[in-house]
Amino acid sequence: MPAARIGDQTRKKRKNGVTRDVVFKMERPGLVEVGQTVEVTESVTPFNVNYMIEPAVAMSGLFKLNDRIPADHGVVKAIEENDRGYYVTVTFEYE
Image (tube, rainbow, N blue to C red):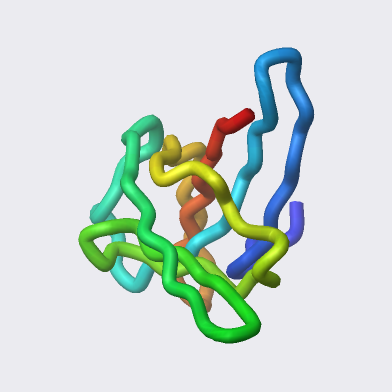
């Protein structure tokens, strides 16, 4: 399996809505755990948007404005470590 990259994402349509996995970059281990529900905040620039797991735990890559995440909470699906740091995959569910 290739290494995760910040901003990687997958979407799956379900009967009750959409699930979306987004990868965040985390600098230190142990700040979140798999299965934990996390709050994310959105930071908007004129052309892009990015997300941060609060309180300043991890940051996503940049997304286009029309690719925003309509949910403000997600569940940590996986945490991967490689030579560049720690990558947290968060699953968001929304309609």
